[in-house]
Length: 181
Image 1 (cartoon, rainbow, N blue to C red):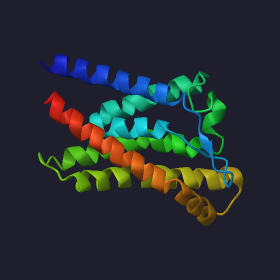
Image 2: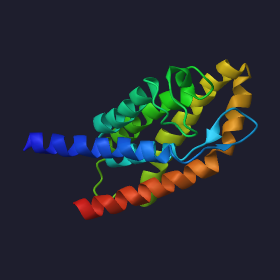
Image 3: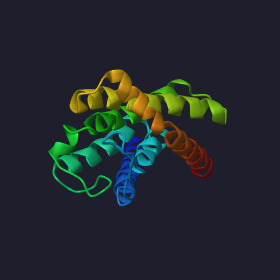
């Protein structure tokens, strides 16, 4: 029975990885104030954190990032390669790796069977928006030679869209959990 569950979760992780690749086909929206664009791919990261156990959510994102590191142009705008991890967006990519594990762990710890939507939204917003944006801003400040405060403030432009994506991810995940269980 354990092998069957592991196989199911591995297949789900592969599907989330494929979803990340598909979301990369949508071009990013440049902000102009910082060298980081608004992308749809972080919705895939949020779904990984919402739908999969921490280990498999992280695995899905890790496989995606390994493919990017190998040079496949899977990031929004057709970017890829190891240079993506040392440029201004490198911190956000590292944050993507941490976010599903943190969100999945927080959801596992809170094991409430009928968790309120707003509670799940709050957990996801903190673990997958705040954490990614803070790690991204720290890295951006170093790469762009800007003060950390300026980098953090520039991330405020991402917050409305990210919160909308969190709401969508939580809604989709809750609906899928109802259907699958």
